[in-house]
Length: 604
Image 1: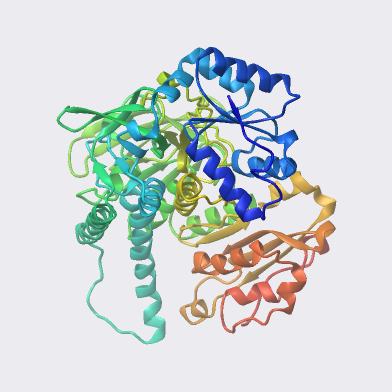
Image 2: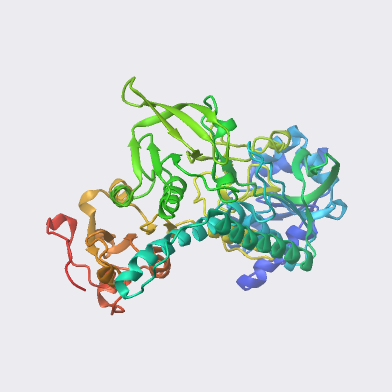
């Protein structure tokens, strides 16, 4: 045992003190931050003595800067108590966690494997947006990094390249198909603006999907090139833990390789859920299949009421297809329900049929083809009534499951939520196993959004390898649902605000608006909608922002930055709007829900 003298950390400037702490952690095999009077610290010291392991100790009650050191340790580890123990740069935790690690064999493994003996400093399992961001940042910081990415084909055989869900079967192709539908609407509007064309206009599915897939392939290639340029080792292999600090990587040919690392990041994302009924995996498709489907899906049943379901139903109807959405309960669970219902109403007025309070119980193939013919039997959720209907395609969008159950986490003791497969982490994305971290959609109770995963991955690498302390802020994350009438939001829904702050403590300002572009085209008035939710007990601070209308994502992004800065209703009132735009309505809102006044609009 080598206790460190009291002069080592005596009254240093904060940045010098932080650097000194990191130096102690990174340059000692075992570093114990202790107090001479703490019995739990004594137990840990005895353990390492019994193991014959030399360790360095800083007794915080014997140095003048002890309280400051403990505050910095709290920032670094989220642990307030002593002992606070690091083994080969890995934060073990306190007394209980160290003894648990000893009993499980993890402590011995950490002691036996100095960082120099690992193949890599970091292995990232999952090559989606978050995993790539984390791996690239770690490489920039001079670390040896490996990325494993493997896509198990969907039941219909669909797979894709590097980049994860967003690039291949999510945000990117979704937004492009949404744009295809918007262009169809723009063609209709154009006649009112003087454009004359005689030929019949029709949509070609194959042309659209080929162009979109070509763009996606260029992105896949770009990611591979970037990893190579940053000296990140990439393997198109399935990663699975086989013991502490060691994984097995299996490629498409079944060939296995084995790799070790000091730290691991789980960024495996999620895959679409199936119904578990006869015919679902045999005959249905999901978003994994839709964007590269080689034929037009024809008459389509979309099962589900998630944002994926409504977005897909919206653009399929927008390109002229017959679309029905089967809804078990409510639309857009977790989003503001007033706006969710407005989206449903708008979609119904524009040709999408909704079959509410029904669930499929059987899918039967009537005829093969591209597309073929399917019979769907559905049962009411409110009784025994059943309905049958024929469709060309059935698209399932009922939720997604985390890809965490078959990667060997149980072999190293990483805890997951057994019901959801999600991984609980602390505020530094660290799992219960100190050297294993997780980011992105696999996290429990965190937003499942690409920019969130990217931000979390980059900051994680900076904390692990760059001495930074900044953590990902998961509060007031903006997002947009790209339904035919786009919905952007940031902060709390009205339901969440009422639950959190109570009805009497919030004020809701709201209004309809009519985009100028819609007026000449003869589009619907009093359809687009905006509202803000304010906390009356906090200077009318804006705690919820919601806009339903064209370019909602572009509008929301700017207001989200303002909310990060503490936006209040008065600041909105003091802001001069840009005319004529949709966003300006938030600078002129006057009507509250509590007033009961009408919010119908006329003119610009």
